[in-house]
Amino acid sequence: MADTERIESKLVAGRTRLLASVEGLEGAEWDWLPGDGRWSVRLTLAHVGSAQRSHLEVAGRLVSGETLDMPEFELDAWNEAAVAERARWSVGQVLADLDAAQHETLAFLADLDAEKLSISGLHPALGEVTVGQVLRFIPIHDNMHRRDILRLLAEMRGT
Image (tube, rainbow, N blue to C red):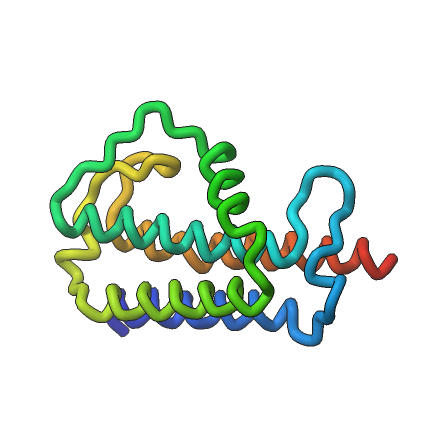
């Protein structure tokens, strides 16, 4: 199996697991807040979509030979600002954005070969990475937030 096929498989599996964790949610469950500063399920998914788009942008710039130098980059502030931009989005908009970001990522990946996957450069949060590493991080990130969502739902339901 080629590297691109392995990455595609992980992207699809990671997103499938993430979305399965929110199947059947209704109304207020999407926006329940634990009161300790964590995001609701809807905002967590908004973050995941935003982050995927950011990772895709970094990967695209690396493939294009551009450097992405952001010496003052602060990950938490970046994430909070991106979620704030999406805070008024409906659940439908958040899910549509996640779907669109995934399709854009898979289309980008389809145009890559082993040589392009090995192009390296600077990622603002991850440091020196290859294009392949950036793309492999997306399903890892999905899984991190799937676990967050499952914990949040367990707290909400008192289980």
